[in-house]
Image (cartoon, rainbow, N blue to C red; front, side, top):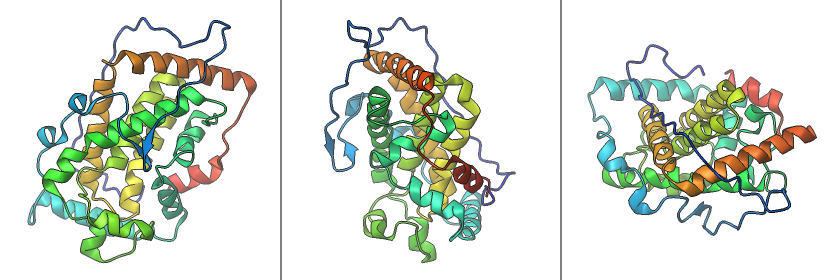
Amino acid sequence: MRCIMKNCSIFLTLVAVMACLALTTGCASSGRLSQPPPVTEIGSLPETGYLSWQALPDSAALLPPPDAGGSAALALDEEVSRKCLDLRGTPRWGLAKEDADLNFPQAAGTFSCALNAPITEQDTPHLYKLLRLIKADAGNSTKRAKEEYHRTRPFVVNKQPICTPNDKADLKNSGSYPSGHAAIGWAWALILTEIAPEQTDAILGRGRAFGESRMVCNVHWQSDVIEGRFMGASTVARLHANPTFRADIETAKAELAAVRAKGLKPLRDCAAETAAMAK
């Protein structure tokens, strides 16, 4: 993406957790995949996912404070933000607007092009539910730091438009650091690479773009997105200790295999998405 400075000195260490799993698949006795129970949501976000509040990684303890005025890191954030403003009105801006919507069913299809398969409540109900629960865990993992630091968002500083103007009041009153969207998108990406390892590069590329969409939308700084990815990876590390999550991964693999066997394709315009991500 044009607005990312390639020789940035910020380095992100991602958590990689692998374990030998002896899991059940969640199948009914008939051999067909059973329907998962519904997810109870408050607003657009489930109150909790797989993890209790006590089990979530603590972003206030894990993340350093955001950089203050006069620092080189803040100057980099501001420069990247200025470059991202050039993308307003382009297809990349349109994709960023789509990525801003975390409501289901819209958000469920975020990675369908990367997977080359649809993700819907009808075709992949367990995978659909898995992504909703992960959204809660990864999003909730950022809340402690958001409340601790309450960083001002770019659009408040530069007075420029955002891609979802109806969200401006809520965003203005919530902390920018770290990015909850970036945490969610990166957690989704890491988990989907386990479900479809043959699509790893496409999935991780889409996860990166999903976080960068928040900079294109003028609602997050680059360092918000970088540390959001860190919290997404930290959440995935914790999830691997949860037996229900591990079992659901195996069931989601079986669902995706069934979709591929049927030859079902994504419901999105994948050519347009690829072109937008290239900007």
